[in-house]
Length: 163
Image (cartoon, rainbow, N blue to C red):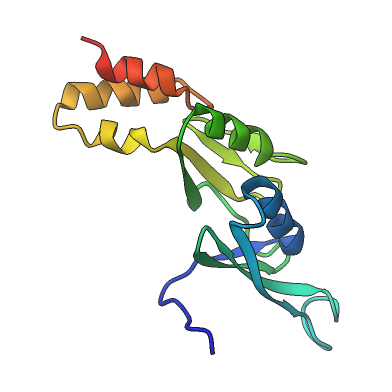
């Protein structure tokens, strides 16, 4: 018996949950995205019998559920997933790959994938910068990021270190 985590994201897609998980496997690597199980709609249910209803998977060890629920609810930027990146190369890769096939870049390091899920693509250095005890440094970092779409780590560091 697999132990169920106490809290896990449950994300409602209009359709394409299985395609989204396959996309995440391509973007992050099959070793970082593991499908746990797939559940299908049955007879006399809201979805077409036999089609995918739910995909349970792990993304970097975090259990998640995606649901093909139809158009009743829409994803918004009010919910997003943050990816902590090691360097600019990882930021660039995710910025290019996550919105493939219908997504779009957003402001301040956010990108929306083709299923409407928002991702924050943030360098690990960000967290130290915005927790600095010097409020002037923190404000310079925020002022810099508010002018960006994709995060430019060198520009953030320059703003952080400016006199």
